Structure formats: C-alpha cells, structure tokens
Image 1 (tube, rainbow, N blue to C red):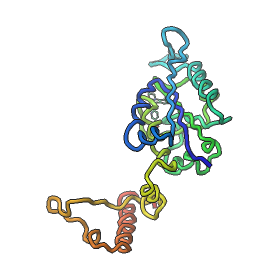
Image 2: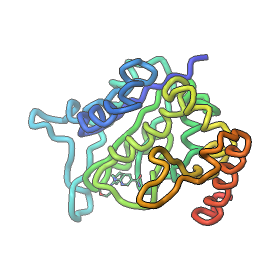
Image 3: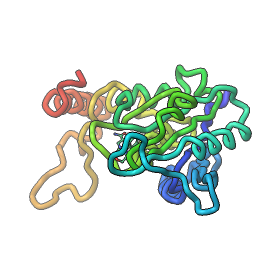
Image 4: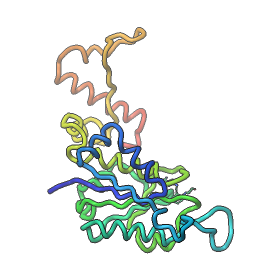
Length: 239
Ligand code: 4H6
C-alpha cells in the first residue's frame, strides 16, 4: 500500500505555503514526489471582478468574514481533481482538537481510512473567521496547533504538514525514521537524549565520557536513561 499523501491547502496566501515547503527535508520530499502540496488560492474563486472574498459580519461588529462561496468553490475545484470520495477537510482554528504526535500519526495513514486514500484538504482561515455555514457544509475535522491565536491559518497548516510528512515512509532517511520507532525519542513519548558533536571540549564543557568510550550497549543505556530523566524533569505530563 502506498502511504504517500497530498496536502491540498485552501488559502489566501498560496505562496506562503509553497515557499515554506520548498526547504530542507520537506523541499526534498516535494521534489521527489514523496509528498505533494497543492496550494489553492481562494481568491481565484472571488465573487466578483474586484477579487472580493470577504464581507462585513451580519449582526455588526469589527472586521470582516471570509465568504462561504469562494471557499466552497475552491473546495469543489479540489474535489474534482481527486479520487478520494470523502477526504478529510481540516479547518485550522483555535477551537479545534489540539494537534499532537498521535493526531499526526493518524493523518499519516496509520489508522485513518480517509488519510490512507492519500488526500488531505486543509482550510486556512483569515479575517475574523469564515462564514459558519461553510464549516458545517465541508469541514470534517477542526484542529488547533496549540492554545494561542494566529493572524491566519497558514502557519498552523504548515505545522501539520511538517509533522505528518516526516511520518510518511521515504521522507526521512532510514536512520532518522528508525529513531522515531525506537525506544528513545518521540516514538515512545519520551524526550530526546542530549546530542554532542566535535569538539570534545567546548568552553571548558566536556562531552559525557561514555559517548567517547565506544561501548555501544552502554551508550544506548545512557541515552535511554537521559531520555527518561529529561522527560521526568522537563515534561512529566508525558509519562
Ligand atoms: C479560524 C478562525 C489556527 C482560523 C479564526 C488559526 C490559531 C490557530 C483563524 C481565525 C488561527 C491554531 C483569524 C482568529 C484572525 C484570530 C486563523 N489561529 N483567526 N491555534 N488563526 O491552530 O484572528
């Protein structure tokens, strides 16, 4: 079974998405076709020749609301391009279920039937938000990347794309993907052990002796202990 994923991103700032996924590991994965990122500009579906996509809120108040029609048309444009019958449509919002590694795994195709079909649609809000009726109409999941407010959904979508992509086979090197499943690190809900590289002494601080010893079994044991210790002291909630 192919675990590859396409992220369709409904956004007012498609270049922000395209640019951000063009670097480093994600950039390489996009180039190789291991993941696909398809930013769709909601403004291409504006309601008039002035490019209007927002309007004043019914009931009054400050700010503007992203109109339902352009978002709906952008969504249908994506739907026509894909095979998946009911792809997940994820609205990035402060009101969503809070994103974490388990949700990332789900979306990477471990459990979710929809995600396994290989298409994920991400909806990025702007202004004061989006007309509630489009949320009722097309959104299947509301996800928040954390309890804070952003000016738009794009950084949140990019966080999700990054965290999900690195779980797709072939995105990370063999070495790194092994690490995620191993006892230490994210795979076991433990924090990473500390890392060191040359020089052996930096500003009087020495690299832990065990790491220079060449005793692989003892090094592994030390790293495991460090992972547990760090988790206890920095993030006891993870244990
Ligand atoms: C939906 C509704 C995601 C999306 C409102 C998005 C935080 C997160 C947004 C808004 C986001 C998150 C519009 C409210 C601008 C604030 C975009 N903020 N906002 N935690 N902002 O995942 O004003």
